[in-house]
Length: 444
Image 1 (spheres, rainbow, N blue to C red):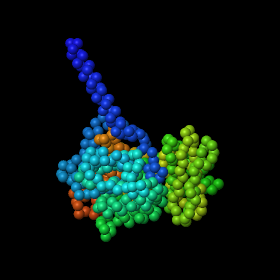
Image 2: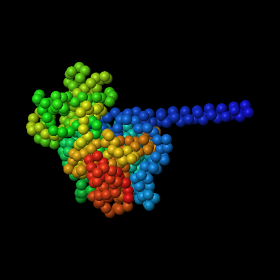
Image 3: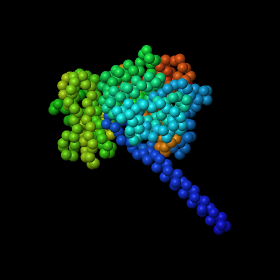
Image 4: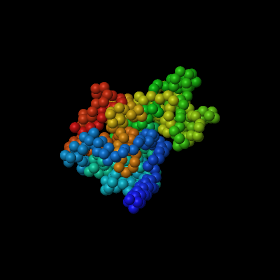
């Protein structure tokens, strides 16, 4: 009896030791799995900052997710995205080679449009997570990975141009760049993006899917109202909008407008009373955005002010990246690129179809926005925490488009887009609504 107990104790110790070694190896290989990823100056990952609890059985959660969308039935029927190329436009591909043949296909085509040509420059796996979703839902689709530098819209457009030249029919982008738009789906970057996506001699029209954004609770839009001192009045006798940093990462406050007005944007330190950031003076008469950035100090309070510099007052949008706003509204909170009428904006809902409070809403485009919504989180099979936010929504819709195209290869982009809208499960009032679009993505 004692001998058996001794053997049992040794067995338990060995098992515990192996479990500890496995856990240490797991954490060593993926040192940033449980760390919040810092936002870039003007390009922010759309994933919300809150930590999503891990699934007890990620594989089972994954299978249930595919069944919920109807993808399992289409896979069984042989429609798995074959011959369809999908480009993942992102900035977080650190260590992507380790996931080839696992979270990603065996082979991917890559191209960096950064000045240094480094696809893995940012310490983030955000783009890998987006690629994992596409590969799970459209396992036979070919993936292209491309990145660019913050504030370089020319590099972003070059990535789109390259994806088209390589034969991509679908683009998926889960980053937001609010100041690249006028807040209503217009502006110079949108004009060029629409041209690149449209039908041309070198190929048919592309479908571009973008995360609707997680800015519903840190965005304000409305008409400029002078409080009597030249500054916008957020509420009666309140010309400042309190800004609460989430941490010590760089904060970007971005202002967009569509009218012929021009605005100045200022950020003040409420603790010291001094100005900490101001948008650069306009050097052209046609600008439609202004940006103010700063590094916050611990336990300091900040406030935003908007002043009409010249021109007729009109509506504007303001969004805070890396901080919360005291006065905020969800209406019109969808940022670039999803606000473009030529882009399919995909929001996030819970598994029972309720809009996530952070998921951005329309209207702020010539096209009803958002277009669609997808359920989150999505189970990852290479990290403990599932992928959440509208970042996880856009690649789901992009992958379903690939399944449609693998079934109907002769369809146009317009036909695939119509099919996605028609097969979506309506969640709100009948027809399109500004919170859940045409409904929850699904395959008939």
